[in-house]
Length: 309
Image (cartoon, rainbow, N blue to C red; front, side, top):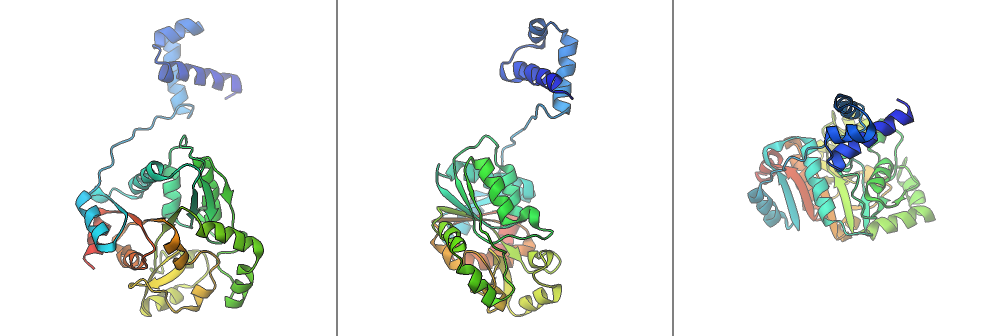
């Protein structure tokens, strides 16, 4: 499709959808038949010149939201009704961000598939000039699509702000290497920006070897993850592994992480976690017990399982 024809499709679509002109009136103005205008409008939709989005109402469960807030001392809780899937949950979280992010504030972001889905759900015309800070180091593995540096860039584009990148790997080779990296001035500068953020957006991982980000990223092998679970660990947040009580697990792995700590997350005014799945209930419980979270976005099925623990 050449530029001239694409311009014609866009012009016809603008007349019809934005200016609300009839197909007959458009045809008369452009010297084309009504049938031709109809075909051009169909072509515009088929080729993506026009995209029609239907915003279905998202139903939430206010009773479960209240129970979450009461039990865990949350500022806000969002519980998606009927467990409608990740896309609906991401849309709910995106709506919360659009309604609550203050213009020209700072948002720290960590790795995650769920976080990626939330970014995808943000409306492209939502421009709040938010500064987005990468709060954990980057990766070059199969999880690169969900890497915090990639997510920071995507989110900054959606929010009309700038992205600040953390120039380091997510996990150092050992504790000594992590200490050296954490002493680098640029790393310290970015992490200080993350610690001073107004908001943080995080995911919660569980320790199922088949789905663990640690295994997918190549940081740990399946037997290592199984051993962590057998030793009392239940999940991770910003790569930090914790138990059901919200305490850091005594694993040497926690000393190799390049990024903000769970203590840092506690100091951020609004830390938002988005997570779903009954299999993640123990991990979500542990994350809530760290007392780092202010907002949880989940679904009914997950919340009922969580509240039963």
